[in-house]
Every structure is written in structure tokens, then in C-alpha cells.
Image (cartoon, rainbow, N blue to C red; front, side, top):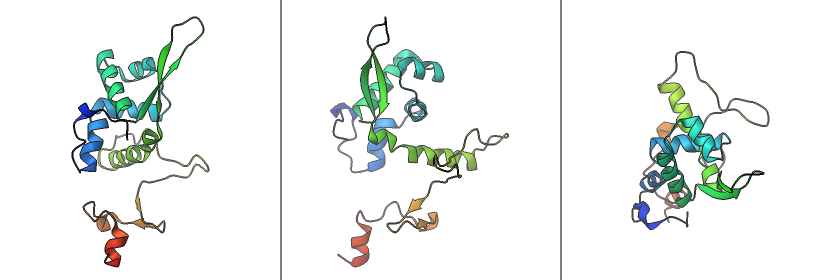
Length: 161
């Protein structure tokens, strides 16, 4: 994310999670991103769907734009003034994995009595999906074998280089 603003604060940290949380680590930002992943693009879409105060929404959208997760693009409807639309960048689209994992976790550990509202399915064939860690050969790795504190280049570590 090269367009990060210096005031976002965590650029000096080596912790990837800390840097990511500076961009989208609060409730409103996560909910805005959820709506963007479901197709919302306009300020009024976000405000109406989330029932969030306009000043809070303005601030959070600005942070997401500065963090490289959303782009601001002008649009104009006939007879109206120019307004801004918010579209996910490739970095924002990649957050679908994060949201899938949050959804999966919530379904398992914070289930609603009536069951999940929506699920994770393939757009191609409609098959149910789950989020998992996958190795370089495409094999799913059990969570008990995942080390989030491992070396950056695990293949080099295995080779002893």
C-alpha cells in the first residue's frame, strides 16, 4: 500500500497485523468494507445500510482511501452535482479472504439461533466453501500445523539457507 498517509501511525512497525489494523481495525471500517464487498459504492448506500453518522462515515471512508483499500471516483447522475463513489482496490478485494474467515469464525463460535444469514459459496458452481491455509502445492494445512510466527521464507528455512 504505497499511498499510505504518514498520519496513520503504524508504518514504523514490522508487525503486519498492527499495520493492517491501522487501516481497517475498527468496527465501522469493517462494516463499511463488508458493504463494499457486497456492492455498495455510494456514501448514501453506506450511510443508509449501516445507519452510521455522516461524520464517522466520512472519516472512516477517508482512512480506507488513504490506506489503499478504497478508491474515490467521481460520478454524476443527470441533473445532480458531482459526487464520489467508493470502489474497492485490488487490496480491498483481497480482504474477501479476511471477511470469509471472520464469517466462518462467527458461524462456528457465535452462531445465531436461526443459523447463518449467508454462506460462502463458489460463484462458478454454487458449492459451499470454507477458508483455510493452503501450502504452495495447494494442500490445506490443519490449523494445529500453522505457525503465524514462522520465518518469512519458510521454504528457505526448510532448506537451511
